[in-house]
Length: 102
Image (cartoon, rainbow, N blue to C red; front, side, top):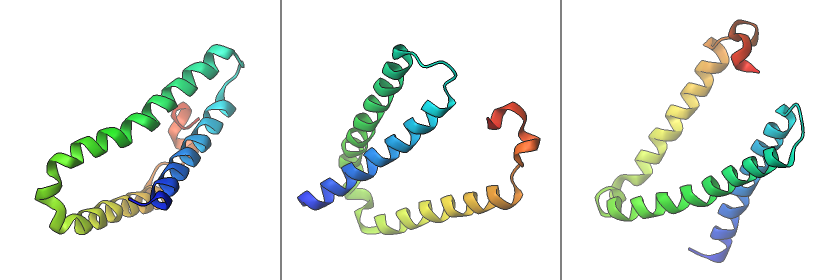
């Protein structure tokens, strides 16, 4: 991987964590240092651990799926797109969800 590729992956991960942590911060009713530490620690562990776990597990199955990995990625993205469209048009509305949506 080139430096630019690694940099862009790191940027995408940090922006994802930033957006999610902003959402968690908005949801907090009382601001306490312990809440900040829990959120930061959780995000730090998962943002560092998931790419490492993916790399480690991927190194074992690379030789088996390398020839059709693009098709697997396309299928995963198509499934995500279909689920997003389904949820947008057929999912429950916020008024039907009750407390779970908030």
